Image (cartoon, rainbow, N blue to C red; front, side, top):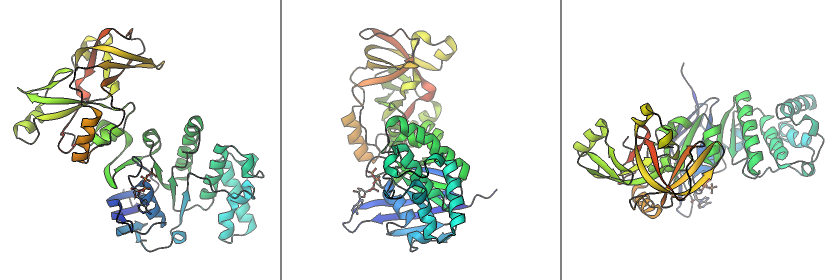
Length: 393
Ligand code: ATP
């Protein structure tokens, strides 16, 4: 099957009049019906990218094609796209029904068609019982559903959503995530969704575009980004709590780290021998790839290695435990990583304290203040080149 890309960004850049380059050479192909998430820290250019697709911002260079047609100079209303914003922008004096009917009235559709389209959308969004209410008498989640209803009645070619859930409280946000996801699957409409929340990005989208400083860092399915982050930035951004990063010095065919000497796999050994990799690396281990050594069976044990460390904090989550253990001196500190990141264009790290964060089974009898043997999975580690942030594994 040939997949026809519905929205194509071809080397799209945005330079604002004050010289700020908000988006740089973004290449992206979004297939018909696909749900794509743009995610990244504040100021990375996600909203600007979305606004260029919507036609709310001019494109400084590059080409935007929708359904094969170049639309750089096409007015927003002619692009057949519906936008949903963080603020609901509902008309306070209109009922839910009138709010949802508004875009259809602009299209001068007859009353019967308008009514039936509104009622259909209301059904999908479970708003039927609220059609005659005013926005003031709705909850935040209901208002956001009306805003979505107003977007879907038009049956546009694509939905563009800019942090539509960020005004909702945490619990409602999770509920609305399911609503958005079901809605998108049911309608099958191409959707581009902006968020700064990596959990939202990982759970909602078919594919995730990770941006930083106006540039795309990596595009992939959520699991791909988690398993194979291309660089330090993506590795640190995806996953919660974040991946742990430690210094690793290459010495006598081994990596000397604060967790002990880590054996080097054949492929990386060859790279090192060919002089393609540096003598200093950054070792990355996700919290969930540690386990209380006592709980690891013989076969699993062989896939990893163990170290001993003082336990500083134990946070019980019910299903598992976040255990903060102290490792001697060699942990890559936040400041160092930030410096590396600045040099490498690789990462904005926050929250990387001096402790190692591990996620152990709930059954672990680990206690604060003791010294504990902890195992980690060598098959899941990542090694990064500190010079450019590239993942070598
Ligand atoms: P946030 O999550 O905070 O909304 P974002 O990733 O959506 O961030 P954008 O709003 O796209 O980021 O902004 C990208 C960059 O462009 C930022 O550095 C921002 O300050 C800058 N920027 C945005 N609008 C303008 C403007 N009109 N003139 C100059 N610079 C701008």
